[in-house]
Length: 116
Image 1 (cartoon, rainbow, N blue to C red):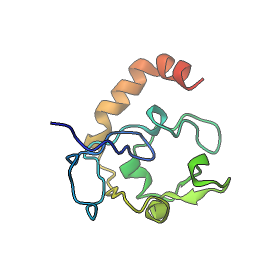
Image 2 (cartoon, rainbow, N blue to C red):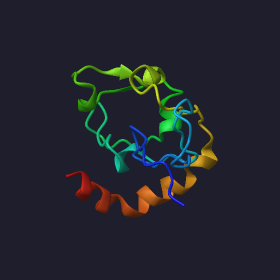
Image 3 (tube, rainbow, N blue to C red):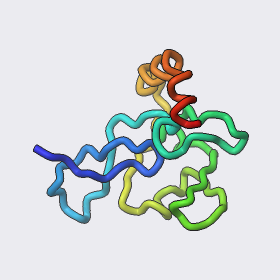
Image 4 (cartoon, one colour):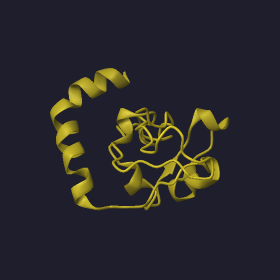
């Protein structure tokens, strides 16, 4: 069984849906990961992006992406305007991020090397 190949625009986690899902169904991921492991490595102040997508879309933070073709910052809570085929449910539950906090804390050097 092969799943959908779409990746979250922020953390690059693979969509949970099946490969043959309907076009009207938006891509989704049950467990997002820190954005530094995907395409968003640095925040506005050049620190490593440790936030998980579900927390970012609930907050007031901003993102910019070269994939959008501009150099502007956009509010995370407006992500759907730029990625309309994605549904990222806002969630700031501590339990969803405990594993990733442990992971980043234990592998921070390797992550920093990957980012450059």
